[in-house]
Length: 217
Ligand code: E4P
Image 1 (cartoon, rainbow, N blue to C red):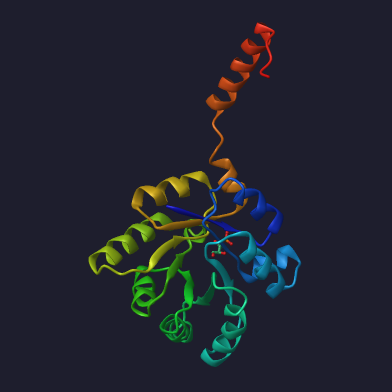
Image 2 (image 1 turned 135 degrees about the vertical axis):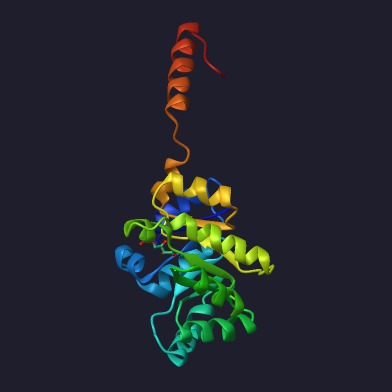
């Protein structure tokens, strides 16, 4: 499963990229607001840090407006994936952009039927939001399993990009279902490495090593 960082914080992205774990980045208007930086400038910087797809969201809601904005955004770098909302106009933009060779991430997906439409429109990525589903008492992972089944039934190439990931359990479940990608805040990606037995083991080894009185080198 590919790992994308769901952030526009370039310091965090650089730090995670150094681990070799990062296959891409997703941003959205809220994350751009949080970063407090110019949208086009920050996307350009992220595209230089990571080689993989960097999702940058258009904010127009009509087809013509989305295409106008996509024209600007996709010129930033070859690894930009234009992010469009799951609406009829978004699907039209998805079809036009992917036909033209641009990667498209269809976002704000909350049903398997919506995911089916995105795949039929040629989406590169579909972003079902699991955390926001959980928030309203619907198990978000059920949606991921349904989409996996549907995409496999018809051999769609669209990659399932599990979004709105809030904790390590989401990552584990997404991997067990066979999602192609998950995007999570850097804090959640860092949580994945943590295990109390790893910490205890390091502490015990360090204590015993100190007793040997030796140094390496
Ligand atoms: C996905 O691309 C979105 O940016 C993101 O995962 C939304 O997550 P949230 O529901 O935690 O805001």
